[in-house]
Length: 282
Image 1 (cartoon, rainbow, N blue to C red):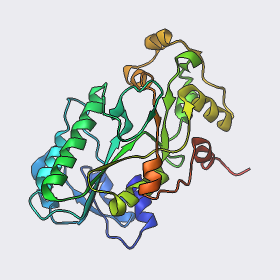
Image 2: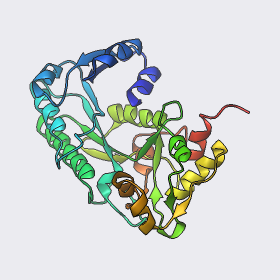
Image 3: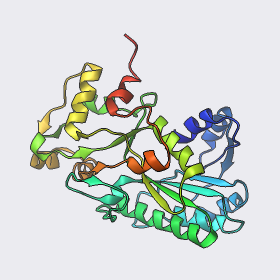
Image 4: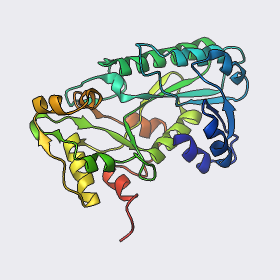
């Protein structure tokens, strides 16, 4: 999603994209992106990446199990085979901060991952930054919250509202953070050309909503019933573990460094504006 938006905004740049799926090769070509077939889970297949480009946008997630990210290690080993890059950007997650009890979070806050998923991201960040220092490649780390995109299936709260999935009652609720995919693409682009070496940037919009209020807002925009509210104890019995993990961490992401240092101007400064952009015109 981010690569497509960046490509559309800057058509003169020659983009290459690594994919492990043969089905995506033609889709990438149609987007004027040169596809490279390889798999980070098979390190030998990505050795030829070295020397093919001068900037790296790394969007691949870690594996779904374990405490480390061997994919990040495989990529950096391959890239060491040639000269350093001019810049690299790694798309991480704000989940590395763990639960902050609703406090405002800047980039100087120490990481405190509370799930294996977040710990894998911490490991990947470290791998990329160590590689950057060793090779002289400036690495910018983007810590990203929930990404939404009204023009993408599953990119909005609509499906969850249709299922009637409950949210927490007000006294148990947690703050949630978001970024529109188009604004994320802008941040990726700016970081590739303006990111400071080994610098971390929070990439989030200006929304200050708790999770239940976010789904209430979405329901009102879509003309749907608001989701039921339940106590945390009840939620533990009704909801899957993955969803509960998101309901166990509360933080408000400070995005001033993104705005002042990268110069990102949000097209969708809050989720209300972003979700409305996907609604039919009246």
